[in-house]
Image (cartoon, rainbow, N blue to C red; front, top):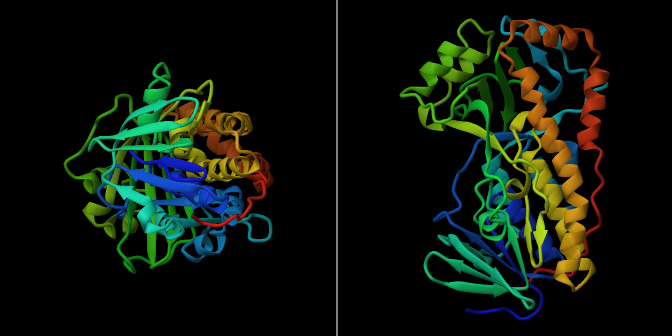
Amino acid sequence: MRREQGRSAIVAGAGIGGLAAAVGLLRSGWNVTVLEQARELGEVGAGWSFAPNALRAADALGVGEEFRACSVPTEAGATMRLPDGTYLMRFQPAADAPLLANHRADLQRVLAGHVPAERIRTGAEVTGVRQDGDGVTVTCRDGGELRADLLVGADGIHSTVRRRVWPDAPEPVFQRILCWRGVTRPGAVRAVRGFQTWGRGARFGAHPLIGERVFWFLTVRQEQPGLRFDDDLRELSARTRGWHEPIPALLAATPPEAVLCHDIYDLDPLPSYAQGRIALLGDAAHAMTPFLAQGACQALEDAVVLAAEAAATSSVPQFLARYDQARRTRTQQVQRMARADPKLSLSTSGTTYRLMTTMTRLASSGVARRKSARLWDWTPPTLSTEGTR
C-alpha cells in the first residue's frame, strides 16, 4: 500500500463525472489516482445534449473549447412535434439558445486527455473502503490497496463507494421507463437540427453529432424492468410505425450494434453526499432520469465545486461538508424535476396526453425558456490553477 506525498485523492470511476473531478483536483494542486473497473476506456454510451450550465462548468475546468469542438448545436430543446409531424413548438433562432450535442465517448476522451495516463488505473474494481482520522484506504478486487487523503465516489448509480460507506442508503428506484438509444452510421442520413416528438406514453428525440451522425432515443412507459427484445430495431420500428420522417430513416440508418436498451432508474434523495474524507459525485450521489438532460451536467457542476472547495482549505472533512451543503440542495431539486417530468410527458392517459400537447401548443417558447432558466442559471466558482501533479 502506498500513499503519495502532498494532498492526495482517489477517484473511483472514470466516467464523465469522475474524470471531471480528477481534472479539477489536478488543477487545484492535488495528486490524483483514478480507479476504473473496466479494462479499458472504450467507446461507451451514446449521445447527450449539453446545456449552458454544463458549458460553464467545462470552461471552469479548462476544457470548454475542446468540448465545443466535439459538439454540434441542436434545436431539440425547443422543437416539439406530434407523431404525424405537426409542430407543437418551433425553435426560434432569435430567442432560443441551442444546446450542444455530442457523444459521451468524445467528452470522455477530452477529459482523459487532461489526466496523465499513469494516473488512470483500469481493471481496478473497488471492493472495500475504510477511513480514519488520517486518510482513506481503498481495496481493489486484485487485492491491491491505495491510501489517500480523499476518496471521491464517482462510480455511478450502483456505486460501490455509496454501498460501503452509506450501507443504509436506499437502492436505485425503477421509474417504469424503458429507453433505447442509438447513433446512425456516418453520413447515412441528411443532417437534422434536433427535435423531440411526443407520442402517447412515448417520446422520441434526435440530436446531430459530429461526423455526420445523429443520436436518437425513444423512451416508453414500461411497468416492469428487465424486458428485452431479440431485434431492437424491429421493435422500435413497430412502436413508431406511422411517425413522421426522419424517424424511420434514422432507425434504418442505425446498425444493430449501435442500439442500447436500458431500464431507467434514479435515486431517492440522500441525506448527505459526504462523510469524513469521502464524497459522492454525479450519479453515485444523485442519479436522475434523463428527461431534463441534466445528469452529466450536474456531475460537471459537482466536479467544479469540489475542486474549488478542495483548493480553499487543507481540512478535508471541512471542505467536503461545504461541498455537500453547496451541491445537495441544487441537485436534489433537479432530481425531483426530472422524476416529475415523465409523469406527464410519458403518461398513457389519453386525457393527460391531449391536455399536455394542447398546453404546449398554446404556450409561448418563453414559457420553456423560463423553465430552463431554473436549470441553466448557475455560476461556477473560480478554480485555482496550482498545476498538475
